[in-house]
Length: 111
Length: 113
Image 1 (tube, rainbow over the protein chains, first blue to last red):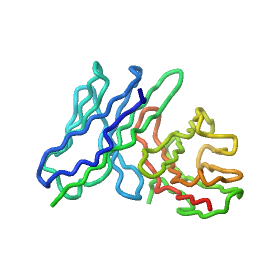
Image 2 (image 1 turned 180 degrees about the vertical axis):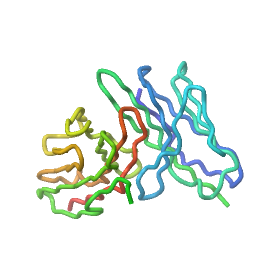
Image 3 (image 1 turned 90 degrees about the vertical axis):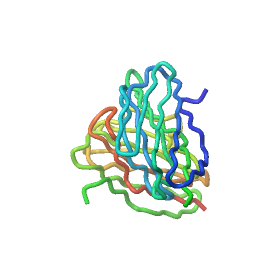
Image 4 (image 1 turned 30 degrees about the vertical axis):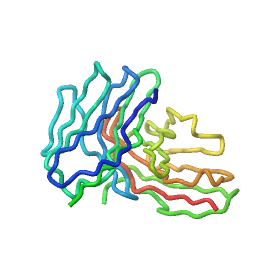
């Protein structure tokens, strides 16, 4: 099992729709989690951290399920500008610090 | 602009040549990371520094790769005897501390002919 797995997509979603991505991780020692957004040929940029209790930022909601070892990202009322690749990031802190990026999920918002 | 900067932005080189990239992190950030990213993949961790100390190196970092952060500020990544498989985007990121948000530079795109 890969350390961090994401559905690569692409997800083709009409504007205004709601879309959700999941990201699974294999190491239960993982301690912090993030969603990054990456536009074509650009660097990744932080979208939001993922907290244990779940958190929301405008149209974006992130959830963490430690028991099932996955995080999710929900985008409501999607905009054309949401088209990008969404990267899941898992940090493991301990004897061996590891920072693992998923391969990303591509999202295309259709007009 | 007080973000992470990288230089050069693009580099084309012939196989067998050595290349060096520079990263200037956000000034108050103790941690500095190097990643490699190829098309269709997420960034792959190469190495990171806590101040001037190199704390972790990925198995991806062969002996042709070396990174330094001599004064705990900017960092360099050198690739010796480049191979075509080294062609990728090399990303640098910095953070305040462990498990904190990483801020990425624009990357150096390397093409080895």
